[in-house]
Length: 107
Image (cartoon, rainbow, N blue to C red; front, side, top):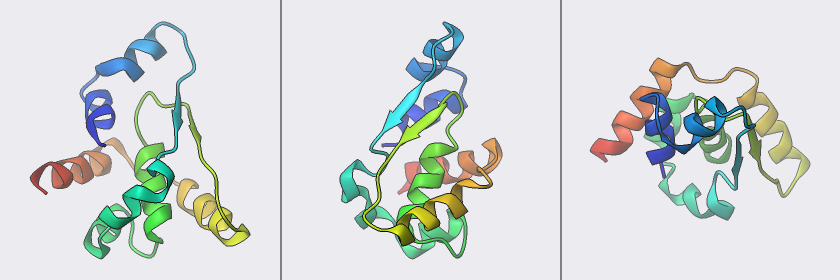
């Protein structure tokens, strides 16, 4: 589900349009209720940020999207919240996020 991220990286799409209109943008369920965790290979996690859990890496990629102000998420344990906080402390740069989306596109 990297299309909204790619669109925002390219300066377009609904997130950029909403932000340009003065709206606060929200992303909900960035891991699609955990369904995307199966797509988080060790190589993809390492590309996003080595040392993170798959869930934290996926959350970091989604939360680093340009024009996204808030990411709504939940966690099943205190440890998962700690992982999320650690991951989100330093968002990915646009260049790094572009490398991730380019890798996803080549699949």
